Image (cartoon, rainbow, N blue to C red; front, side, top):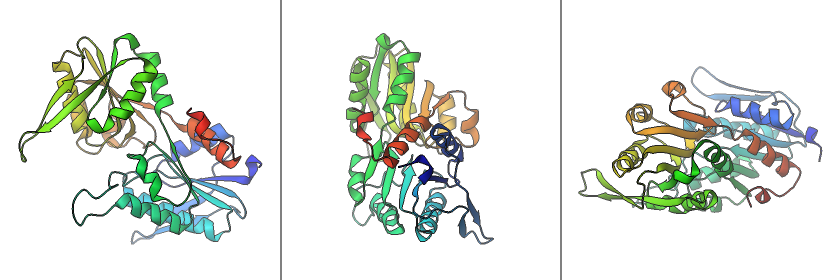
Length: 315
């Protein structure tokens, strides 16, 4: 299938990433107007012929989540009604992913709701990265490609840190599997932050399981939101003898007061990807290093369009 039969569109969530992906593919970003009426309603008009085309819409559902999600839904509907052949939603960051199970009575599984909304709107394939939990793939009845930022993050760590002094650290028990995979690839030791809530209305007590004395501690998580957990973990690691703390995550959500906490924390660097664009004070934070995943997404989009294997990239 020719590359010229593919069309890539983007909403307002992360146009810089979309343009970078198009640059790697050597194809221009397709024309679409996304604007709002005075009352806030979203209006979308597709500016190109898409009949019979393979469509990719790049739109991470990041802050403001509901606006970007609604933009995506309306773009999908417009493209479906314009007789496109197949619509793939490219979600570098999948919003509402943390609500992936019932943790209390009478609460929703919103990650499932979003999956159903996308499918009903007309999405026929989803391309995303580092889902908060793998089970979300099962919420869809259409193909889902869940990519990993690991190759990009591992390359940076290998080239910029003294690996012989590195210990990979999981900030909680839930992230141990992810952290172990990184430690195996880098051939480093593994440590875990053990969190225990002393009383219902008191902060959690933290301790380190593993040896971090004299080491560069690399905290690894899938996302950093308010940065409370990693900043507290960094303090514990330094108190336990680590000489330096570097934090890594795929998605830099960075909601308030994340930047204030990072600036005051013991963390030397926070390494994130450009799945979510930096906003406000985050752009000026010297501790944040952003790595691009545009080349990886471009290659996967090319493979999906050509019906080639995607999984072989990560094996």
